[in-house]
Length: 296
Image 1 (cartoon, rainbow, N blue to C red):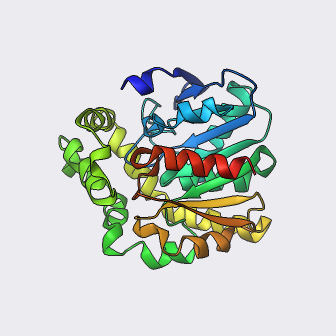
Image 2 (tube, rainbow, N blue to C red):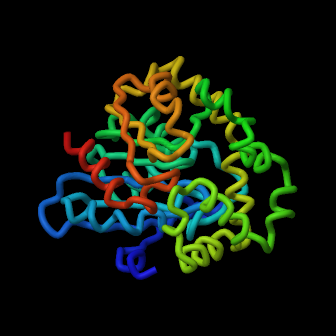
């Protein structure tokens, strides 16, 4: 955990009570002139720890890097409600603009569930986004989501949406359950050490953590309606966008077409030697693609 603990860790209370909305975030600042701000949004079953290998290189390249644990994940609070991607994006916008006092447009980078949040962020707050990088997720509201949400490879979409049963079956088996996803979706499962597995398992075994994680999936159909409504009312996202995938991930197929349904200005990025978990499987490849795009 040393790479993760070297960064600055803070918490911000977006709401004090009824319910408490507390967001934990990790920050790395450049030693010299700052070129901009990069917001990194993690996926499931992960947390801001996902970016432990890339925050240092990104900050060394001149960027202030902020990686929050979104509502319900990591060290953040776990309220019973508020898991639409619009709400999670609004949490992070509030964190940056009102609590960290960032007023400039930021580069938003989201992976997996974080990709859904990043896309909502760019659609809701386009003037606050300098560029958008998202991927490794079938975005609710697109044809890819409709075509694949019940596919065998995404069986967990349906399982996580069942009320109460997933919490019952996974309780006490969090490490085994999370490891299934790392082993199955990574080209390089050895990227996850035993210490990494223990860290993630400890986070997700905390009271309410798996319920919060499942609630993120239970909101997908509401997200679908939200995303379609945003396209109808505002048009496609106009911020310059890269859809980023690991070249060994099954989600690379159809990613460009999916992005073009909802984004106007799209380029495709692929990270070699990586499956689903790009920032952990090939950190240098992830950094290269992110910097190559944000610095255009």
